[in-house]
Image (cartoon, rainbow, N blue to C red; front, side, top):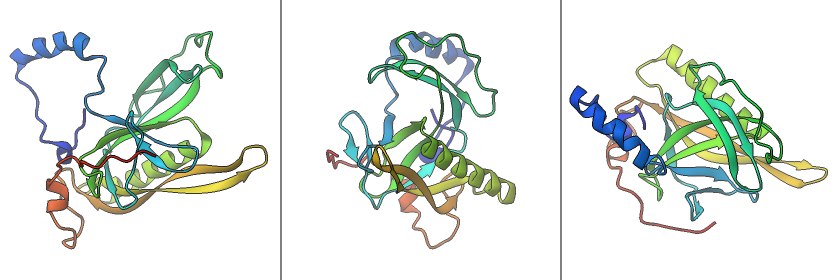
Length: 215
């Protein structure tokens, strides 16, 4: 779920509806609520979802400033064996022994949520989480920039970013790509742009894109 009204108007439910919501947790726990996983593949392309749809290079994405998490993940052979993530407003979760089949034990992981507000991916909501050094550095840089912005102007805490990349040459593995989140502008929680030059319909029209391209 998201606190950003640009992701859809949200409000607290009535008290008498809470019991129904709690009962639905068990049946809904196997779904992601329509949020796809965003990642950068080994060739440096951004992709999302089970079909690994390639991200439109001209798309821009709104970052939910309340969605940053940190924690740990344990990977097996291409599958997650364990994951413990909490909001960055909370201390890192305590860990027990890693699953025995975990290839590298517990690895630190950070993540956050985004929604595309312009481009062919418009309307797509995704979750990005990463364990690599370069990926965590990019997330940390973005988080610090958002913190600085909040201290400067709390009315525009939402970073609108383009998804970029950079690379370096590894002696053993060749060219390694790392993510970049280039901040395009700052907007408010209700989608108001920082300047009057950005058309308001870019924020309000969040119809999902129909394009599907394989990476």
